[in-house]
Image (cartoon, rainbow, N blue to C red; front, side, top):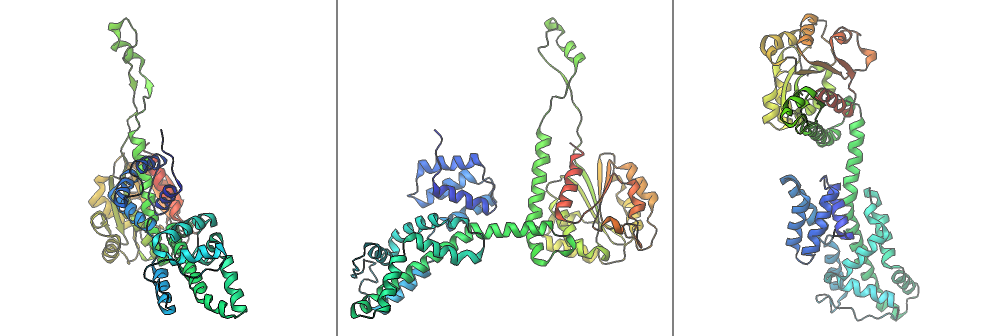
Length: 462
């Protein structure tokens, strides 16, 4: 029998997915089966079981452990410390033991809240707040500005209204009895408010902050490359890594799929001649598939300064997904940059590339000559050449003869230009002169455009 997933486990799986883990439905079912066996009593057994069921790599194991510690821990203990301090100031005799206060209001709802606030450390308040938070829909929080709103909804679901009414009524009529019970009521309200806020902030950290970051990342991915701000670039690192991972998963999966292809009738009949022609063993014609082989030529000159960081970031992320990848960068001279991209952190690799290659006046003709003289043998009929640049050659010879020869040698030539088509051919732009030799030329304005172009380049090997 398939174990059903309770609300606690479903919330954990949801928090894990929000944090970036790819926990599938089947893995969530496995987690439910594991919880049905080990239960919630032993924290370490539960943690280990969930990690085994839901994590597929060392990185996801670390992520699962971190989310577990956050999800299955009580909210910040600031409320408890504040409550103990307030009890000490009020001289309450039961501050250390956590026993129920001596105050009895005669109202069951108020007395129950007083007991919960007094027994802060025994788990009853945490359980009650958890139920109230679920009723208030706290798991739907998305923005930090909603913390106060959901805190109030949680308190209302907890039933704080009678306690607040009792406190306000007592303050309005300052009789000796009212003045005597006012400190205990005020203390209970403060404990409940602080603990409810701590719980809502914990849920925001689990669900809201990742959702906000995901939204901001979607905005950054759709933003023109030249308008990316420093915070956008930080988000783009994670977004580009996910893009590259998706491309790798998609195209490696396609390569693993073995299609029978078209039935080879002659080979089938010859192979089964000894069976009176009965086709016991079938033979098929298989179409040979090339492995992706990509050569990337990236312009890092001053004319594309606004786009360089992102272009190199995507080039950096492609090192893993594309097994046979050669990477070159140029401004006026071309240099092989595969080694720094493979061995250094991105920021260090980018700084090294820009220091050694970038910043100069653009010379596409010299870059093509360098490619022919030093690396021409890496381009053959199985190679897709991907050019990232604006095609502005600073009024130098664009060497169309070399580009035409490159196009003849390669399987495909794909040019991604960060400038819009309306600017192609203006000033020192040679885009319209290079375009006839390209398999495709497209305006690369956003990260999504670049992902789509890489996807199409890999599709050619499909």
